[in-house]
Image: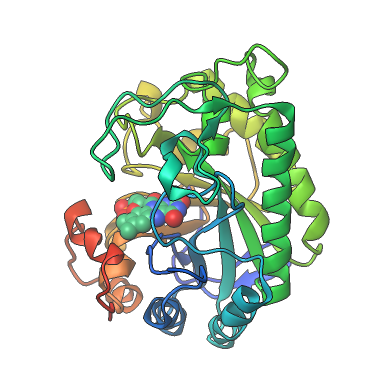
Length: 355
Ligand SMILES: Cc1cc2nc3c(=O)[nH]c(=O)nc-3n(C[C@H](O)[C@H](O)[C@H](O)COP(=O)(O)O)c2cc1C
């Protein structure tokens, strides 16, 4: 068991966190037209920092105008106006003593043509998710198998967006390598059927992630963070495990060699046994990396947070912090709290301003 304590200070590289609780990245679909989130959505992030979260992740920010988008009204960080809209938000999060980290995302095969300005859906292989798209009610589009040009273009999108985050003053950026989206779909043999050097072996499937991490690292100053999020589940075909145990350990081992400052593991339930090992995902992941480890998934009260910290350094909360602005204080006081349901979280996508 680790010595970590929920309300003790913690470090990621040169950055101090006032406690071990962070706001998980949450897409809010509030950025029409100019790709800048609604003011109440930005204020929501600042309030989470002021109310005790040591680290605040933004929603998943899109990395290019061709094929990255997968949900309506997502945000971007590449124009001067977008950067200027975020600058005071980042400063307010930092003034509250918290870290601001921007998550970057390419939707990959979970997207559909009409949602993107250039109308394309791209993925490692021309394999559509099995289930229908819940947003369109129709089958998913069979994606274009990415060419070498597409791969370079996607990497540049992450780089340009990371530059925007640096200009906006963020403490760091996160590469979204989880949930079945583009990077994750390269990592998993379930969706990556390529026969070139981006498919086949675990090392080949990791190649795109490696190139993105290294390219992003080059434009993010050394005193700011690069983190990577990974999961064994996707938002589509959710029941399908994306890795087996050895594959997962390989991916974490490769990540460990890369210039990322922390690894964020997203689970459906942090306490579940991973791959039938009797160990949790965090416990298993720890075997392959000593980097700071964030864990997320049904951490909703003091007991679950303490239990999750047994094998991780930082706990992230999605729905609990989304719906309860006083969550950090509630768990400090060890108040009894119920896990929030996915249905309750749907309010995130409405025009309703959250407390
Ligand atoms: C409304 C909503 C939006 C989300 N958007 C993102 C996202 O943009 N990026 C991401 O990595 N995870 C996203 N997630 C997943 C959360 O970060 C988190 O992993 C998940 O909610 C499980 O944690 P919880 O049990 O504490 O809610 C989202 C979750 C919700 C509820």
